[in-house]
Each structure stands twice: as C-alpha cells, then as structure tokens.
Length: 473
Image: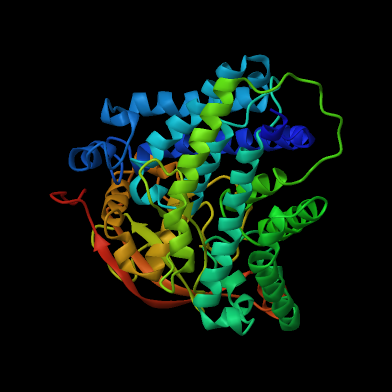
C-alpha cells in the first residue's frame, strides 16, 4: 500500500515526535509542580468540588473514578515519565501496536488533567497539545513509514492555528488593519520576556513591517502547506522563523513551540529512509477510520472560521479532538497590574508597613527585569493578567488566593517568587491595589535602572483578614 505512506517524511516524523514528547514533559511537569495550590483538595478551585457538579460526559477524566492529591500527583509524574521515555525514543523499540498504546497514555492522562483544570487550563495551547497528541498516536514508529493522511491532518491543524489567528485579527481590533498593534502589544502582553522592552522600543516603521509580515504568514502562507515540495517546506520554515521571533518577544507558554513542532512535520528533511514492509491492514483501517472521524469533526471549526462572529480557542467536543484557535483579536493599549501586599500591623492603615508579594513572571517591582519562562507555564501569573483587565476574571479564585496568603500556605507560596513574611509569621491583613504600568524610556532606564514605571490607579481589594481571626498581641 504505497499510497498510504510517505517514506520521504521519515526523519520529519522522528523530529516531530521527539519535540512533541518534550512539550508533553513540560506540560506534565507544570501540572505536577503547581496543581496543589490551584486545583488540589485545598486549592483555589478544588477538583473534588468541580467533580460534584460536572458529569463525566462533559469532562471525561480519570478523576471521575477517583480523586486525591496523591493520585493526581501520581498521574502527573507518570505523564512526565512516559514523556521522557518517548523523548528518548522508547516507542521505536516497541511493536507498532505497543508504540501506539504508549503515545495514547500521555494523551489520556493530560486530557484527564485539562478536563478538571477549570479556568487554570482554559488556554488554547492545552487543547492544541491534546489535538496534536492524539494525532501522534497514529503516526506509527520504525515498523512503518508515516501515513500520508495523518501528516495531512497535522498540516490541517497548523493551517487552522495560523489561518484562524490571522482571521481573528483582521475581524477584530482595527489596529491590526492599520498595522499599529505592535505599538502597544509588547508592553501590554500577558507576560513580557527579557527582550520585550527592546522589542517595544523598535522603530515604529519596523512595527508596521512586523504586523504586515504576520498577516502574510497567517493568511497566505498556510495555503502553501498543501503544495508540492519544496514549496511546502519553505512555507513551514517561514512559519518556524515567525514563531521563533514571537518566542524572543514574550512568554506564551508552549503556544509558539507547539506551532513550531507542527511546522516541523511539514518540513521534508533530506535523508535515506530505511526499507520497511508495508503498513499492516489493521493499521490502515484504524488510521483511515480515525481520519474520517476527525475530518467530520472539522465541520464546526471550519464553520467558526468562516463566521463573522468567529470565536477564539474553543473546543467542540469533550475529548478536544478538533478545536478552533486564535489569539489577540484585540490588543490592550494600557497595561494594568494587580499588586498584592500584606502587613503584620494590628490595624490596617494607609501608612502601615505594607510589603509586596513578588510573582515569578508577572511585572511587580519596576526594577526587576522580566525573565524567560516559556515553554513552562506560570498559570497564576497569567490569570493575574486577566484579573487586572477585569475583576470578573478573578471572581472564582482571587478570594481563595488571599485566604491562602493569610495562612502562609506553603503550596501557594511556592507559586510566587518571594513572600515578604516568614513561614511562621503570616500577615494579619492582605490587600490588592491596581497600578498602571508602562515601559520606561531609554533615558529613564539609564537614570533609574527601572524597566517599568507604575502609577497607582485604585484599590482592587480592601485590607482583608481571615474570618473569625483575632488580633495577636
């Protein structure tokens, strides 16, 4: 069945699979290190409470069978172990059916996590990792050449990621059409990186070129993925270069990296594929049946892309098999940040000794330069950016965050860069204030050493203490 496989993409498959396994490893590591404070039994949005009100058919997950923090940790670390094994190429040592089952394990484990993760896991790259991870199950291993139809479906995902993002921009904020969005985006993006300050200060004409190039890459180049080689390789390579530019300009978890991984599947590397027997009939039947299912499920994403009311980052089935993507249909012009502070004073006054909590990734101290965290995902920091946009985003979890800070909760404090209070002396009161942040100019940077300048706007949360607590002498 020579029509079924594409031996020329043998090395492309290997590179794709190892890179995807690396992203799985990052995703499971993020879950293992952060879940207790976010969704654990004493988390801000506990999984057990979620499972009580959401039936399994709406959120398929192993945790509907059993949940405990210990079991969640076991699943997350097991995901890390399997991802590491796949990264090392263990799947190539197994029979074809064994390799497929091994690739199915991280997909099932991560689906279980995402489907109980609530707002902490409501990002497009979660569904994207699941959709791509499901396709990886059917790419085969060294016993068979890559199936053409699965490669096509990977390129179809990449097309929807890029083209969907391009359409949402053209239909959204007028600054994308005026080519002016990057006058603001590098400053107002969710989590700036170490080079974002410099990107913001690039000449405005270069920003116009950046936006125009982005439109070409997202609205024109994706169609070239389905053309003969070497045009398809050139198109995928251009996407990779564009994504690397975005990697340098900010922290977007693994969104850019998984897009790069998808593009690698369309790059045909020069190599001499080994001689292998044809694909077994059972494998052909399974792959074609799954492909037909996924193409049928693509109706909703295509309908959404063509709609004038296009939505971003939406899953149309609880298994996240086929989804719609897109980012930054609108761009903020002003950056706001929620600054959380605590005091040990018995009475909270304006002149009390308020000490600021430092987050790992989000802006805080104006003198602290942003760091590179992506592809690692700082979930609390990202949600703090949304909270600054509107308190409604923080409604379900911000009160619980404050309560954990008042308790000096160890797991919550691990999500932060630094707590201003000793472990045995929690604050009496915690408050939150909203500030406007802007990048300093070159002159201000030289004079003050600060990359940010901030201005107080208003109170976000008044001084709060634990209910029923008494003042300590």
